[in-house]
Length: 579
Image (tube, rainbow, N blue to C red; front, side, top):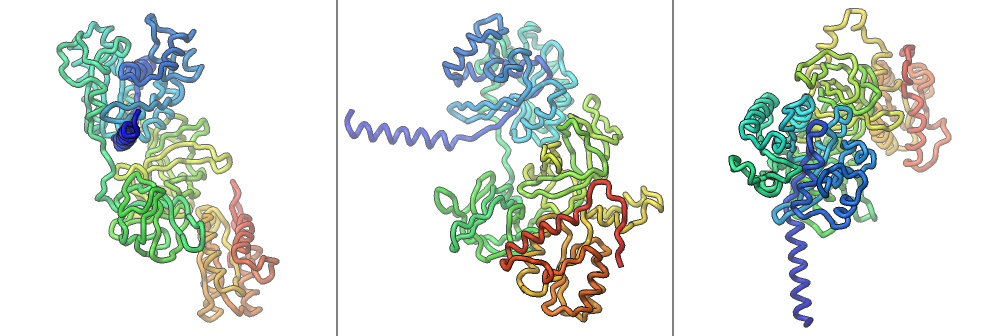
């Protein structure tokens, strides 16, 4: 082989890699009832498109659990768990990757059993398209309705209704048309915009990769052909910028960048951006990546932004377009898919993780539960595992979000157990409720229930009020405020630029409202100290009297430990005295 030939081969290989990297990626999920043939269909798709490795194929052929009358049980290609193979059902979500000359694909093969509905929702959460299987003999079942509803709830715009097992109904056209009309009526009811119906036999390979000779009456695309040409809906670049900050990168004193994934809109060098929650505004100085600087970035690119000005920004904050910001609210309604044996209850406290931001929250109301068999709304006091319900939440600090139908990233969240850190459910935000101001809830209460006691204010915040007196270090108050706010406390600074009597009055009023107050006064009098201690009782912390480190950062860490004692334990029922 000559040197020139080697260079040509390297060029061809580089071109091949570039072409593959630039192929569009389609993520799709399979769904349907038990024994509809989802795993068999995916196995047939991989096998007939020649994307199964020889050793995998040999392992399937030799498997003792091979249930097929033929040489290959295609379901074993995707069902990897031993329990799945032994029972002949899919339990966990199985992800498979393959590629053709036109596109790359990631398949999420999801369970069909009602017991594993939460797994189906997990697999479908990132999908661009859903392949819903319908048994040609049994027709549409309750799980078909359940999975179609979840697909619509998760914002999957494109659905392929695959009428499987056509070999068992003698490839009859009238049976296909009957089931097609039933599914189209269901899709219209659920608001699914784009539906394609394809008759297939996964076991025999009809219309999966190659057109079927046994169904000459069908002239549409095969399943693979449709997957290769279906348009992929991407987030609108005309939407305002959404850039949740995941990490602050500070390798040296000359570089400070904010890393994250673009969740909406498009960002260019020189663009003006607004930081939430601080409200500070600046411009993008540069867009940095591992491969070098970029002039612009868009979803779903992961980049690092350098800003023109040093502003207060940390993990969980968000950079947005000043002219098109998201909702900023502590109250919202969401559709929740519950995934845990521990039921969701009204009044319970949970953690919510939305983008990179994690906050404490409380369930204020369960609107209704959806009966999947009828799609009717039912009243509910609890939301149990695999239930789907409309729930209102109130958070300890604001979230920055869009409605899920507008942005699947900023409009979604997970519910976390604050004690075990277990993921309990997934939510899709429907509506901001900050404009309601709790009027509806108050009207539903009796006059006795509507009385707002100090404890109710404290319970809403999740902590008792307190006063921290800062006198020695001028820069410390702002650092404490940011740290306590980030930890979920309702906190504010009161400065001694007003007469002491007015400052005490302001502090007392904020205490009554349940706030943590940072009172900044470079020269507090003994009388002020006495009055503030009297107002806050044992929740008055004079930093001059405490043995604190000289470094501000170490002091902030110690104060956070002190503040932990302000948290309200579960079931607290005694009001604190507030003067």
